[in-house]
Image (cartoon, rainbow, N blue to C red; front, side, top):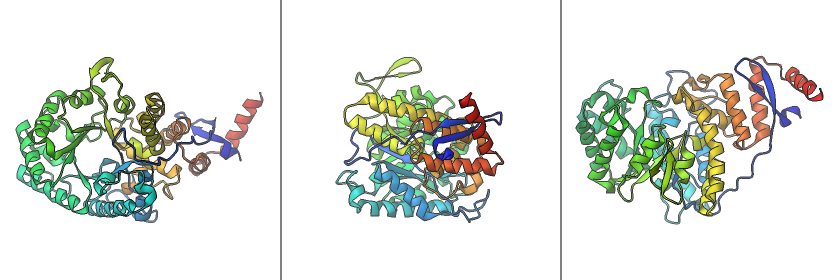
Length: 430
């Protein structure tokens, strides 16, 4: 009973403390399509508990649990961004597993459209690409360096395979291109070739070095403002081929500066897990505060790893916007943003551990394990703060289950929770 009512937490100094455990907030599922924003949750993969998912081993994926998690996103009216960084692309998800993931997820999206409950929360003319986009990269090539021609060919190979499944494509930032290209013109040429080969509009992804240190100087400059000029030239060369841009620099001012220059019809999909609340909500005067200044702009749509950890809240926030209540949307998103800032704290590329941890706590996977052994990438005190923030921001879907699982993890680490509860009780009595 104590576990169901109190959450025991582990602080940085090794001490234990307790927190009253509140009930889960009543975030309603949508009954109609979300209208105000286009939202994709970048999702993780669930490994086989008995599999050899040690560092360097090929990913052994629990497909039932992995696809069930995607159906959970769709049931909330959220699209899924698959085979991207959150799925441990280049950090445990090997090329063969990536190809299988995209194919299986696209098939699951097609099946979901035949489910009346899920179809009801997407537009009547929705296709697989409305439910799912997938990352396209050059990582099937194992060589450290490639020529510009080889990079374009590798991109196109993955692009064609992804489009064949019906999924939308996200052109991810390529480590190969970051190593090889030395000028903005070389970036523009590679992207031109890839976009020419695309059968429909794609999303461009600009991933910052906080997420992947190997992507320094992307788009030809270490200065984001200069890189933005290159990105915009790529878009302006043929806007009909661009569905949107996902910016993951954790720099809201840089995102807004690009957003206000986008051609009509090209969406800004925020990838800023630190500042997504005000970027998504925007305001009625078409200005947004960033860096203490009023910057012209409207709002961003979203493609966020943070939303895989906070899907019920994310869906509820967009429902509030649909209902004309931006204050309620801000209240919900501000709380989730506090959790996101912790999950994505430095080293930011280990945020996937927090996403998988919350999926386990919320009952979406059997065990707290990850491909590549990445479940060990965050400390116990860090995870303790994660569950604390999830509890206080309304992002524990099943609080009693989450507490039970977390407490079992602490006990496995040798902590005497009964003694901690007695100490807390004595303090309350005093």
